[in-house]
Image 1 (tube, rainbow, N blue to C red):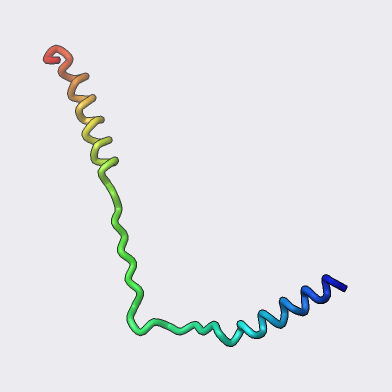
Image 2: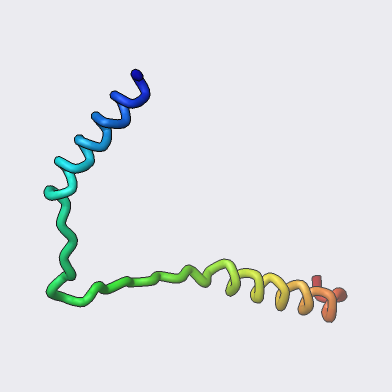
Length: 61
């Protein structure tokens, strides 16, 4: 019986809250700004180029 009472209370509570929630579309469009960090790729390319340069000119270093 306790389970039935808990379910009845939960159902009644959900019915009372159902009228409080409203969903409306915004007037203005949603703007999503994406800032992508490409620093790691640039550093990797520079490191690879530097490594190749050192290998090609080992007598200089």
